[in-house]
Image 1 (cartoon, each protein chain N blue to C red):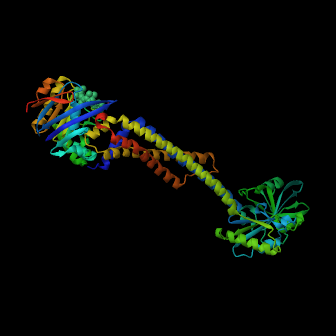
Image 2 (image 1 turned 90 degrees about the vertical axis):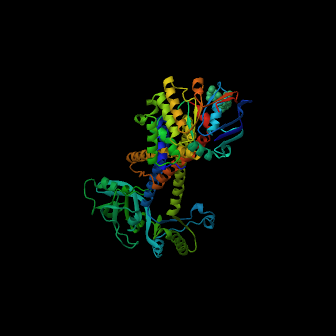
Image 3 (image 1 turned 135 degrees about the vertical axis):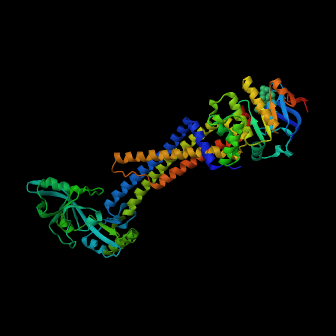
Length: 404
Length: 224
Ligand SMILES: Nc1ncnc2c1ncn2[C@@H]1O[C@H](COP(=O)(O)OP(=O)(O)OP(=O)(O)O)[C@@H](O)[C@H]1O
Ligand SMILES: [Mg+2]
């Protein structure tokens, strides 16, 4: 006595159509659960992509060198003895290029100064660096070129300016080739930075970039603010970090007086935050699916008691307990599959609207979340219907039939 | 064919025990026409449900075709109900969302019979009961007599050996009741064992063998 699967499907479908209110309620419950998963994970994924994008503007495989010992690094005899840390110099930066694992470096000096062209003047951030900064930061040029490819200690009088500076100083006139005054020195404008470039903490539209040696002269200093080092690959980051520490310790008479942080360390922090976010999303989604599951269980129980007489009849006609369980479960399976598909559709529409409302958030639900939501929905639907189905299979046929 | 030996069926209602069947022993041969009568609450339905394996005795043995069926598993009992027994109820018990054809088809579907064979068997029974032109009607589009005929079609489509009818005319007017009885008697003439519970003495007297119940006991067995 085996039921044909088409018979099971047709019988269940008939039962679902026979009780439209119940069917719609269950479909909606399932659909909300699945839609919640789709929308929430697309939000989480969107946030993750957004942050990753922000990070790639900071640079890839980056190691950052600061002068001075980081306070979090713990006990340090030099600070105990009141020694001031040694400065980072251009020669230090130069020394770091000698490792095979280092792709490029950019020393940085930062200060602020008046910038003027003809009668217009403005105070702004001046960054001294080298030509490799462009590639490290993934900036792009709107006009002209970036700093020339020369030795670090060559103080060429050229400047690359941000878009906002360009607009404020030059207005409608041409900026390229013009001489501007920064502090008491003159620089020729050779390029304008693209306005697209974003960099955490710095507004690239509002800066002026000059060769690092020029900046040192301008600010009358021999030291560097920091050195950016780009490793050849992600796996090379740790060895580059060690190489920097060793090299600079050598050059600084054995003093460990620099701080080296990797982008990995910063990313790890964000990973933790985003990981927590993902768990939260998964948790919320799981709750909504559990609610759907409990609703399904109740509704199936109601369905079973609504159809007590029918179940009693099926028993009288010779349905085995197993057959009754199969019929009820297939009904639940059909419901949850339909509900899940409906929810998927709703969820996709939801993420579409989020993408429209917040264009910076690339809110696409990841495939794994969609597959998981559908699977969980179907499994929840069936598992939570097991109890009502067993209940139906155990019904006393005589009592069931005597009920009207 | 049917052998009941010292059957008891007790129900616990609150802290009281109701002896719905009290020491019933009974043998029915294949092909007999048996009516069961008696006042309300005397245990007629309980006896019929037991015979149909819808209910289990509290004690005693029930042999169907020589097999002790009380010891069978739920699944085996379901199998016996499907193959050997046809029920006709007072309330018809048709599935409202299914057509007459689909209602009759149900026991064959549960038996796992192929759709093609089902179709021909269902159509044959419906034709026998002059229901062919009603086969695509839902129960609520049928008269009481027609509904009971659909139920009889459903009970006979599996070609069982026994028909158990619990007040089959109880919800019908006189004329439809007569029709239904005539159909059941025809089936009996073709060799089916017919066991029918009825309140109507006139109908009960038509049976070849008349049982009478009182307080869970058989108090009269006439016509053997
Ligand atoms: N499930 C049950 N629980 C408790 N008592 C029951 C149950 N089923 C039947 N009884 C009792 O068993 C006795 C016999 O009931 P049964 O239904 O067999 O009577 P009946 O002869 O069919 O009556 P009627 O002519 O009214 O249909 C009655 O006293 C009834 O109250
Ligand atoms: Mg009764």
